[in-house]
Structures are given as structure tokens and as C-alpha cells.
Amino acid sequence: MTIRSAEALVSGPPVDYLAVGNPTLDVRPDSSLAVGGSVVYAIIQAARLGLCAAGLGRGCAPELVPVWMPFATEAFLYIQPSADTTRFRNESMDGRRTQWLEKSAGSVSGLDRIPETRVLHLAPVAREIVIEEAVRAKARGLLGLTPQGLIRSWDEHGLVHHQPLEIDGPTAATLDVVVFADYEAPYLKGVAQAVRRAGGIVVVTRGAGGCEVLLATGTQEFPAIETSQLVDDTGAGDVFASALFIALDGGSTVSEAVRFAAAAAALSIEGIGPWAIASREEIDKLAGQDSSLAFP
Image (tube, rainbow, N blue to C red; front, side, top):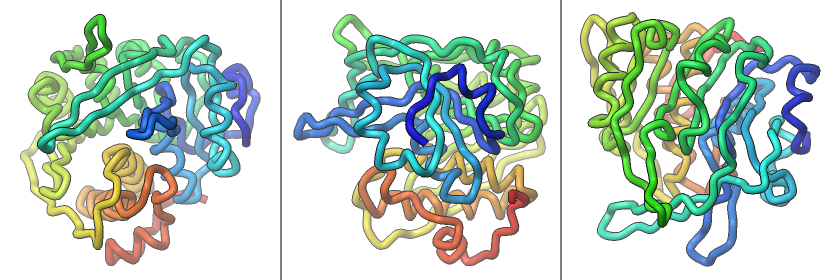
């Protein structure tokens, strides 16, 4: 399953889980490049849960092929051509992360033409989708959003900042589940209120502090699942969201789905990057439950 042209998505094999957003090249401390982005982490988790998974985004295929190859037998990656691949550089100091956007692949187009899929995950990293347009490509099952890329802005040097995001009522009504981190919450208050008001589920993750689920009827706190070691927490939120979407669409209750997703996230931080993403059996074992997700 090497990188394919985006046009092949329409005629390709049916997909259970489709994530939309640009894959990234992440600059490591030693200046080497690693494949990343919400799309990549989400579809690898979906694939390791037994689903036919695919990502759709924009990028430079020759740049992506070498870093995607280790995962190319697991999921499909459909790419719209660009001269550049979205590239991020992160620095951590005193527990805080500073992020630079070094390159952008640009916007993903043609979302109204993507084929129907069981779970549709809108997973932007750098404002590459317009949410009002993207929700027209409604999944036949669950439509989930991880909006971190929609609140990012950057200056002329590429230094990333955050800005508030608002959505209208009709857009909110199409979203089944929205997942974001607690540090993003101040910029997503309007989104959370609109989705809750429309009857959707909002999950605010807090790392080792667990998560909070916001519903129209109230809120509920859930603890994190302890892990033996923290090696790399990159992509943990995307893994959590992917596992949560799949569990909810597969018939799990909110409590069951959150615990399953928390176990997936906990396992993902015990290793480096996408290699650490766990299988369904490993997640079930850590979660202490037998998942019966309704997928082939």
C-alpha cells in the first residue's frame, strides 16, 4: 500500500476509516525527519484495530515515500500533489512546547467527492481544511473532528500561535464527536458549546489527568490509564481520538469507549512514534475489557 494519487481514492478499495488532513514531516532534535500528523497516527491505529484505513491529504510524494514506507503495508495514503510537505519543528523548554511551521502543503480539495466511509475523521494540522466544507462529506457512521489544526496560526517566521474557532449550528449538528486537549480548550469554547447543544460528544483530554466528557446532559470525568514508562507522547491524542471514534461507532458505551481509547493512548507513549501504536488485543488487555467493536 504505497502512496497513491488522491484520484485513486474514488476507485480504490472500500475504506472503513478515512482521515482527512495533511501528513507531516516532523523535524527531530538531530534534524532528521519523521512522518507525522494526525492523519498518520489515526490511520495506523485504525489499521491495527483491524480496519481498512486510509488518509487523504496534500504533500510532496517523493518526500513522503521514504518515511511512510515502514507503514505502507498497513494503511493507504492518498496524496494530492504539492511542491512541499507540511513540516513542523518543535522545541520543549520547562515543560512547554514551542512549535514552528516550516513548510505548508496547502489546502486539501475535493472533499465533496470522497467516497462514503464508516468513520470519517477530520484531522487538520495547519488549517488545510474548511470545516464547513469538510462536513458535507458525511460518514455513513460516525463523523469525528480533532480541531487542533484549525486553531493554529503562524507568523512570518513560522512560529505557531493559537486563535479561537467558531462554528455555526448546522455545522455543529453534523459532528458526532470532537476531541481536543485541555490547553486547546480556551480556543474551542464556542465549538464545544455548539456541539453539545446539537447533541454531540465533546472530549477534553488532559494527559496523565485523564479526560472530561461533555454532553448536552452534563459532564463526566475519567481517569487516565497508568503506563509503565513515558518515552514519546507525540500523537497520543490522535491515537486516543481514533480508538474512541472506532469504539463508539462499534457500539461501545461512552465509558467503555473512553477506557479503550485511554488504553490505546497509554500504550502509544511507551515507544517512539507510530511504531508504538498498539493492536486491539494489547489495548483490550490493558483496558481490562473485551471489546466487541462491530467491524469485520
